[in-house]
Image 1 (cartoon, rainbow, N blue to C red):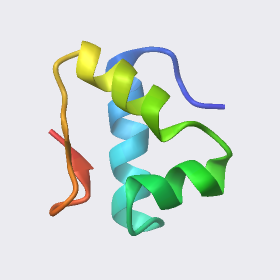
Image 2 (cartoon, one colour):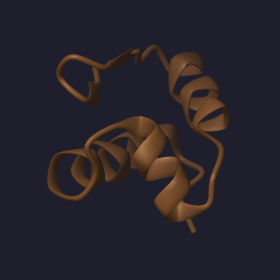
Image 3 (cartoon, rainbow, N blue to C red):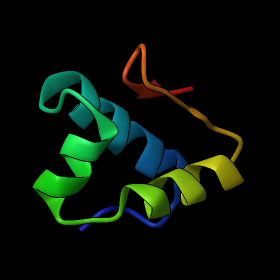
Image 4 (tube, rainbow, N blue to C red):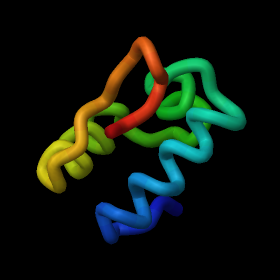
Length: 57
C-alpha cells in the first residue's frame, strides 16, 4: 500500500525507483498500481517525472 500523503508518496516512489526499479512503468507493474495515478497524484503536488533520471522532482 502506497501512502496517500503526496510528500510521503514522493519519498517512497523515488526510493523504490532508485533502489529497485529501472522505470516508473516497471515500478507500477511490480507493485500492481497505475503509473498514471502515481503521476497524477505527484503532479498535483508539483512534482514531475524525469525519465532520464528515473525520479520525480
